[in-house]
Image (cartoon, rainbow, N blue to C red; front, side):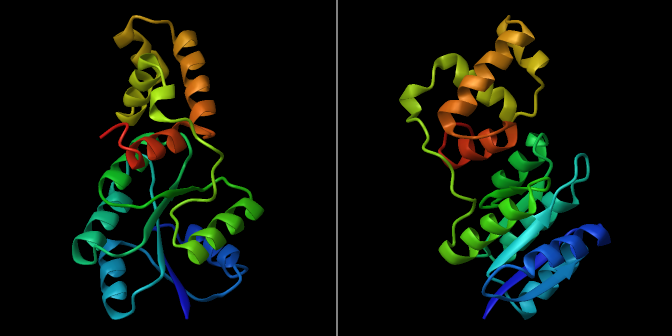
Length: 198
């Protein structure tokens, strides 16, 4: 039996994601909890094939829930979902052991495709486009990626590198294209998985 467990402190998010996931072929049970305590307790009673944990900017509970779950159950397939521009939370969650992330603002078809892919292949993300080898990234692009992984804005990265914000945006666009990603969050997640940032 294929199962999923959702953890988010917002009831509307839990109910909405449950409705979307109910359309995933082969997914037979979906449980939902509101916090890290409930997550660990529920998982200890009945493990799930995938655990989706919501993150909210400036709210550490989702990140803490991932860490607590994986401290007790290292094999848990934990995926975070959050805002695409919230690279800080996604970075912290992946550093804490999450295996990937989903964008909360993804379209219903994209979300269904990603969830189906995760459940059928035990992967951590929807299929991505071809990515460039590390050697194809310039030193400046790697510096920009590092700044993103630290939650810095384009302006902050620019000041540190003595470059204009527009120049940083240009480097970021090239970086996204080379990595085959759409935004900062995807770039940071990819960077962690590939060991480009730590």
